[in-house]
Length: 153
Image (cartoon, rainbow, N blue to C red):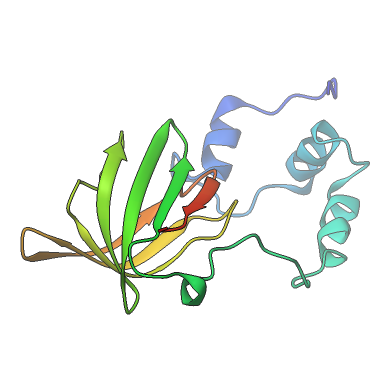
């Protein structure tokens, strides 16, 4: 949106913390930014955020680990173009059987993971060749884009 108002490049750099300077921008600058974002002024823009709910009830599409049987496989994907297949070993333990473009490697052992579609994957512990690699988070930006359970027959 065009505002026909000017804000200098150095002012924007100061606001975004790229250069040091006055910590508090002038109201004129804030009004121009709010107008650029499609609001009448800064006060109206900020008022919009005070009305946003901080919590909500949602139905999440997630993997229920307690419903898995030993040797069930789980495939999950996340951006950019990453796909991992893990094998359930029981007692919240998994082993990576396939890994495409992921930092997880085949035969990594995983403990206590939570897979929720559209949210980042969080793995409490990754064991690689006997060494605890620590926690692992995947899909930090787009979240998990696909979850598929392959039941052991």
